[in-house]
Length: 267
Image 1 (spheres, rainbow, N blue to C red):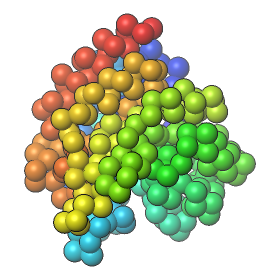
Image 2: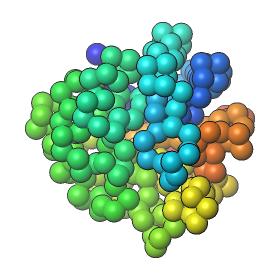
Image 3: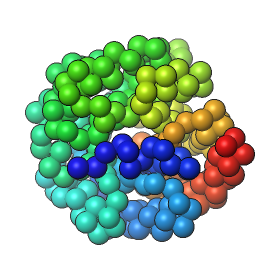
Image 4: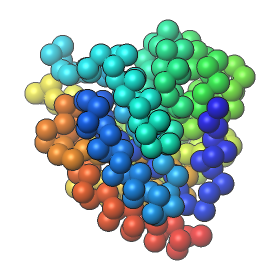
């Protein structure tokens, strides 16, 4: 069983990265191979990220996935091929046991972080549970989400900052939240791509500001974030989900190299 001990207490930050959603096997393996090569060379603990299904969509005709079992099998293949742990979202309690058969970390989406049954179901699998902070919650409120998982018998918990609702169609990041949530005793991650979303656009398609991904990531590492989460794609303009706020894959190496220098400076 993969535990957070393999991620925390590292000299470097750890990375959760990959496509927003599993679009197909070739694409997933291509992205994973590129990131594994980079993170191995840079000594960054790495977790491959990919949603097997997208449940939170603006419109009924939005892409949701290629099929649950098919996508989960691709996540397992990434693990078997490259020897890295994997993480995926779950949205309902009954999904926890199924997803846990294929991945190492179960992620609770921000909008669902108060759903008690979902948190408890994830906890009972024994897998690491990554809880994204709700856009509507203060950092201090996340102690109660984490406590639900811990009270259910699982202390393998990660917390992720992903911005706070600012008006109707934007988010803002309050970096005080990172050290505040670290006080609960769990590693804290900065989601450098979803925090730049511009949701609820009149077109029904979420916007974003990917030009600021590096700004968000640098600031997070500078204030001591334990890990970084980001979505990346070889061509975000062709991504089937969240392309408006994804990092082009060919920019990842430069970003990680600069972030390592910041990490070294603050240490």
